[in-house]
Amino acid sequence: MISITEEPLDLGELAAGAFRPDCGAVATFVGTTRVDETGEAQVEYLEYEAYRPMADRKLEEIETGIRCQWEVGEVRIVHRLGRVYPGEPSVAIVIAAPRRGPAFEASRYAIERIKEIVPIWKREIWSDGYVWVGSQVATRPTP
Amino acid sequence: MSTVRVLLFGAAADRAGVRQTELSPPAAGASLEEFWAVLAERYPGLAPMRDTLAFAVNGEYARLDATVSPGDEVAVLPPVSGG
Image 1 (tube, chains in turn blue, brown):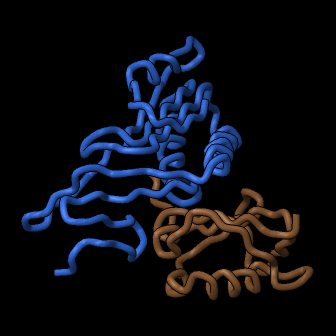
Image 2: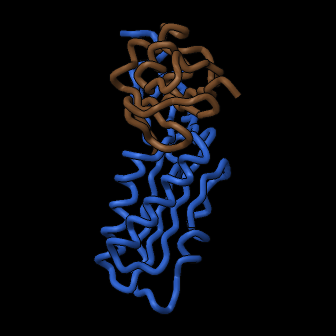
């Protein structure tokens, strides 16, 4: 199950929905927004955007890649778009597998691939400007 | 349809000042690299980002030697930063 959503992530429902009798391990990875502070300025929130439907297709490719490499029962990947406040979940990955090794390995693979190939971008909105994460494009005052 | 739809995202949209535009390919059978030259001329703010950008044609990552034809959709993709 792949999803890109503007809604807050319901982690409990996401994990519990992956429980099944043929799987003895459910690995959950949650990425949350981490922010820095510099001097007087703070990050107020992050804003995510995606190129859809390419982003949806790339997430589906990641699921396919997982199923080709590991024996897993359930793959759930959900990514947020829009405004996400500091400390909130921005991505959740739930892998149910018969055994714990593949569950751990597949969830690690999923987050690494998301950061490599899925066309999603985030911008930090600071109290004094913004910064596109990963690009040298920003409106914040330079120190 | 004689033009190519161009979508820009993230920092590239910011630099260009547009999120979407239409451009004609410079010639029949033009490559993505040739198409980029036209785009960067129209939106000079994009030019310094060149080495950091990836491109998609019709929703799939494309190399610079890929052909861009009228009716295609080209996306300008800065380094992804999901997660």
